[in-house]
Picture 1 (cartoon, rainbow, N blue to C red):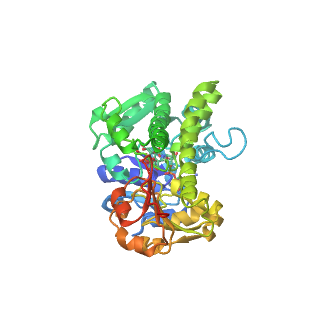
Picture 2: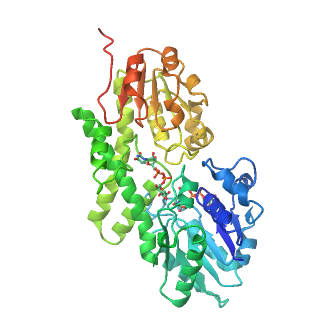
Picture 3: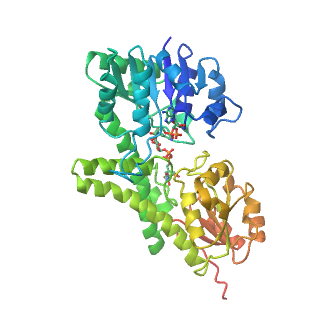
Length: 458
Ligand code: NAD
Ligand code: UGA
């Protein structure tokens, strides 16, 4: 039996450890966090995050070989392998503010491991970190008077929220980076052995530490870059009469490009894309690669432009003023099938509409509580309404900002009848049947498509 500990019971720590525990009944997996409410939620009937399929996986292993606890210190010394999955947000102060990763939580964890350990351990970077973080960690951990040796391994996580369980069960690849030394190679093997319990060996890649750390940042930068690229094209489509869905289909059929991650949208969100690209930008600047930094920074700028453009389009279409007008936002989560609202474009749009003094009502099947917390003081100016029909009542416009499947199945005839006329719909995810909505009487604005508008002056 191997004692596995994970420090950080968030969107990554919880699901990844639940899947490991479910496939490795011979190992004992403990997940710890300083957030007592989160730990209590993992042990309850209401998990702290909404993720399809997660409840069943957690239930299959909970209190068998999967345990959640707030006793970080106590569990450190029992562990043979410690995954560290704490948050690594963008730094908000000092050098590199707004770009560099804030490594204080990660470093605190390393020192806590050192303080409590009496036996050697493998420490695994699960959090996303700047290249060469492992070097700093090794120095902190191995500069000790206890005579203990620690091996640091990089094992970045590639799961996407909304499909986390599926991604963990059947990943495209697992990456394990480590040192070339004898103990480094042994440590790599120990991590490979865990994943090999359910993942074909050829999909488990082993690399050096720095390649592993950089591959994680590079993968997110590439994915985000695809979204920004198609969103850039969507802006041009709106000016020229081209249809971005048709363009995406046409270019995606080229198998050098491929069809995935070509959905034009109101912009990408989530806790990682922006943070990881800015981290990459900071690293490039640090190494004197100014042009490379500028190149990647454009991916973030384009994303911000897409969100601003969406709000401007609402204002100009609604006769250049939305002050006092009720606007229903369909969605708060940064994508479908998650309750996560971190960096959600829905909330960026909400803030933009509030700045224009609109009356904003937000509906979402799972993310309203997080949206309220995320909006802080601005939440007082927003109505949170779980029922989309109620949200749309007496509204001048609906904006689809999260691609929840349920929004495609609503009775838009009833919704249209309940709205102020002329009624507008802005489809920020291109998920609705625009021609049908137009036939029902809506003025329809989609991303990267010619608007379908009735001339009410006739
Ligand atoms: P999160 O904020 O949901 O979870 C992090 C948890 O760590 C929090 O619950 C926090 O209380 C806990 N924590 C912080 N310091 C601690 C300490 N000293 N001791 C114990 N617990 C501590 O973050 P997340 O979304 O799970 O992301 C974690 C890391 O994984 C980040 O580096 C992120 O970039 C990366 N990542 C995230 C995703 C994702 O989909 N969210 C996917 C891949 C990688
Ligand atoms: C992303 C990556 O896909 C994961 O591999 C990675 O592990 C993770 O970041 C991370 O490091 O945190 P995630 O942010 O959960 O996962 O979700 P994605 O499916 O990548 O979507 C990100 C954003 O892009 C969402 O707002 C989504 O709506 C948007 N998106 C995605 C588009 O607008 N168009 C697309 O074609 C695809």
